[in-house]
Length: 285
Ligand code: GLP
Image 1 (spheres, rainbow, N blue to C red):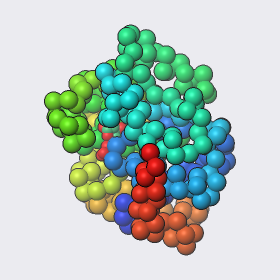
Image 2 (image 1 turned 60 degrees about the vertical axis):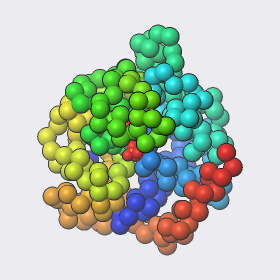
Image 3 (image 1 turned 90 degrees about the horizontal axis):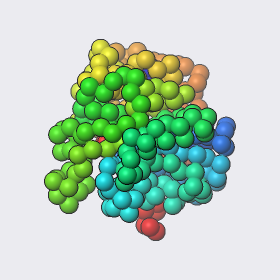
Image 4 (image 1 turned 90 degrees about the vertical axis):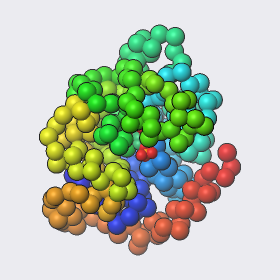
């Protein structure tokens, strides 16, 4: 695991977008694992901007999302399909047929979960999985006590998670109680994982995820088992880490991070510019 601390949320999201773009340019047939949540919106806005201004090509890319609520149709305002269409898929040249998400409306949910796992295998596995983190440390919707070897399945959402997501629904009671989520084991099978966390409300759980013991109570701790995993944080989310001087040294000195050290010089990470991109990216849907 590597931990990278950037000065602010914009710089952190910009770095993640550049990492994804780099992988996509190296492999136009990339199988990309995607996540939802507020934190990801800046990443998707930046990718949309790169598509429009730099010609970043999504035409050969396949995507698999981590999770979807059970019982929400794809047209529901809070479905993750709707989120992905809005923030990314309809803004770039990806073939919608190549964008996979669990079907939370399936009559047989267990069969749908098995089908999703098989689809990922059929496409050769996920090359790069983008991750956020819930306030309780979940990845996708792997709530406390998620088995570290779990596969795609239905999970009951914890009260903490339902409360965290409630502001997006017109009433807290309308937050679904269940979701389909890729399992912790499914996530660990991805070739590379990149987790983005920003803001001081994530600082305590990030410290546990990175420097605490591995436990099924906090699924993000399982990333300590992954051989190629980077956590990209802003100063606030990294503020409770004990070894941050070491993490900073790694970023400043490891050759692999050299192309990402001063993105501002390359002209795409100024804060105002990303804000403008978000407005541009969301104005025409
Ligand atoms: C939901 C998603 C998670 C995501 C989390 C973080 O719970 N299922 O995959 O990591 O939201 O959301 P935010 O970025 O809004 O904090």
